[in-house]
Length: 330
Picture 1 (tube, one colour):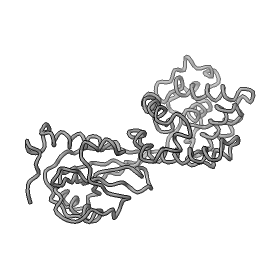
Picture 2 (tube, rainbow, N blue to C red; picture 1 turned 45 degrees about the horizontal axis):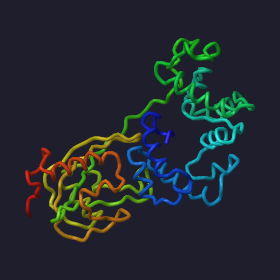
Picture 3 (cartoon, helix red, strand yellow; picture 1 turned 60 degrees about the horizontal axis):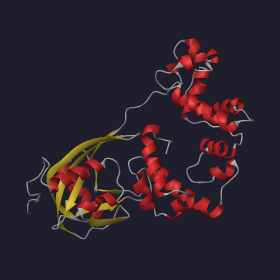
Picture 4 (cartoon, rainbow, N blue to C red; picture 1 turned 90 degrees about the vertical axis):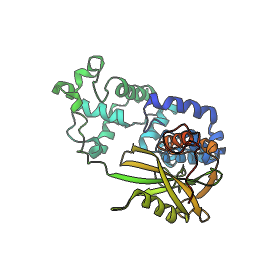
């Protein structure tokens, strides 16, 4: 969980996770939907899927005791494997997470982005490691980066390595690590259809297992094409993805969400199902569900606001829609 999430954000998720899956066997026996539901809100859902697969392998094969054995598990790289071996088994294995890279880059005032010099950084981490106390040393090194040698406003006055730090001697530790120039994030507009039938059941589909949000459920839709109205986008996407025809009604909500690699604007419209049996042409499965049951399905984070807007509309409490929550007739 800490690979892409800060400790303060991660902790309540971890506590709930441990209640649901107190050991490896419990995690291995869970189904993927249970796992994704517990992970919901943390993002990078491929981590949860890999953790689930790793738990099954550990339950079947036992716990590895070497670097190669851990790296053979899904989603376990060299630094995570070294951290497990040093923390759990007190083995002298170096680590190189983001905190450690920052500490080393500042200690040596390294003039290039660490990602360009990973072999060199691994050598430094290995040379610094105390082979007699690898567990304590690696934990201290990570804590130094997390609490003292922070990305902004480092507490140099509290750092035990200040006399040896080239970045401190240069007068501006925050210049390090050096970063590559970042490119602007691509921006896309996504048309989303919240499709209701005559009984006010809502249509959702489950994404394929691949990609960042694989295995999660969502309201159907897709990218707006140049020159296309958002109403036409939603109508086209639902025809292509689900083989259904809908009447696109009023806008329910518009929201923006940023990922690490792109920014999205979701324009969400209420839709009335007209014809066609929904088919998972671009997904694993589709379902008609009662709105109160949506909490049983793992959704991407952006969908929480869509669900809240839908619940408000159905209750006649939201701004969008008629007081009675009825869609216009065809």
